[in-house]
Length: 474
Image (cartoon, helix red, strand yellow):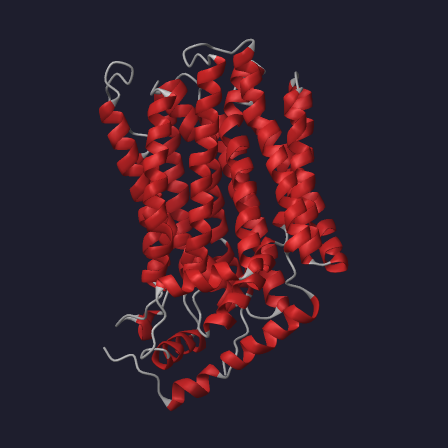
């Protein structure tokens, strides 16, 4: 099918659309799935394979190394591949089919992670190791297509500051709901720490939830006609001088704001993954409590997040997105540090609640920071490549998995962590405290300070970029 632009399409390109609340609701519900994936994966997968399946942490570290190498190619290249108009683009949109199909397939492969081969992982770890690597890499491929395209599209669909604030607010609501459902409902309600069948049963519940969410996003992901026209027009204009992935990467990494965002986000992601991967370890191996405690702690986190999000949004409007984002990372880092000395359930819940309050500072304006940094790169490229930029960002986030698991593996090995024990004592317990809070706290504080010192996408520079972006889209 011919996808060339015509005069009618160019005229349509001049008009912007007003979106219904249903559009915002359906589109932003994608953040429910995204956050559910990240929270459930972060809190359960490593704990499940080390403590329940009894796959040695060294095998897990090797698996994550392979996973990270796969990510080096998978994340940015898949995102770049899906941004080229196809024969179906004019009818269905550039990204719509990619997003919806990846949502369904990603949900199925995610759940398969919790159905490893029924073999003794201690005596014969290879089958489980191979299965884990294959399934996680498949899941990640679908997640990359889903995340990079719906996140990238949100930058181009919602152009005005009002629309971006609206989608950011609704996205945060669904993101919070996704986190609540995963960590405060499914995990503590259905999972018993030493019962393998409970993890499988919980996975079935997870699949039902994710498939329902996949249907809900369909209306929201329908691409506006004017935006499809823009993509096709931009593609036709640049066809003779097509932009390679190498050029996108080169231009993006030369922009200090995009690079600073990536570095800060990497540090935050390592801290985030360390804390979430450590949460069940901390509850069962340090506090010696039931996994059900996770429900109360996560409720505290979510409550703190929801109550203080409007306050942080007002602060961000007053002091600017950049300052609010950097300060948010510093405060979150401070909130992680008390896990070094928490000894009771009450302390654990209080510190998690404080973490939710401080996390809201950066999370409430994350979409705005992403949009601003991507806009600067798009102007430099002369065409839209938001999904590719999100793919590059995803690579850094997934690379943080390897670093986080590597840190946990090293600490467990050198502190004598016993996966078969009901709880840890001495150096092993201190090791869990270190990878739960200390390392992540330091990384977040460093990330926030660097961001405040380097990031300058604000004021006149931001207005100038926005003006150039409007000219580009005419």
